[in-house]
Image 1 (cartoon, rainbow, N blue to C red):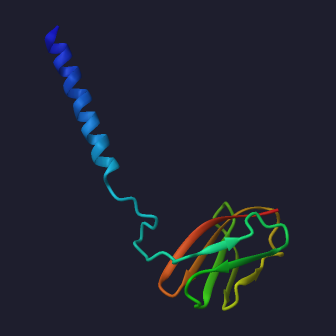
Image 2: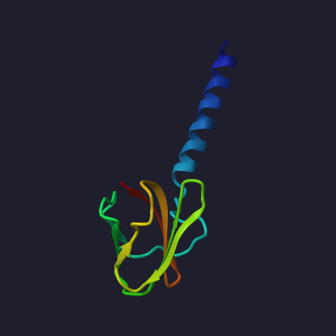
Image 3: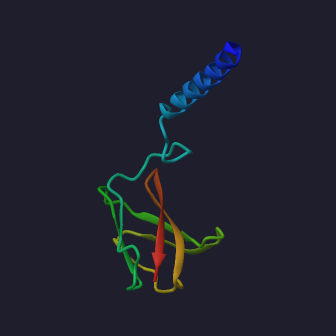
Length: 112
């Protein structure tokens, strides 16, 4: 009987150590290790007006790509201004990818 408890204790201990070691690993927001865009803001989200505004701390040109939920690119532009016209998109959920210099970020975008 003591042997069963020892095996159970050993199993629980190993499982707990594995869980602790996984929690201590740093979580990368970007798996490709590309730098994130500092101070990125995309608003309003959800949008009803057909326009979104994209701002960041750096005032560089931004390459914007928007994908539907199936991964098909439905919109692409490069802009120096913060205002982007997305009135051509139908209502739905999209993924927006913003590239500024060497930094890249992706966010969810909802168009009403």
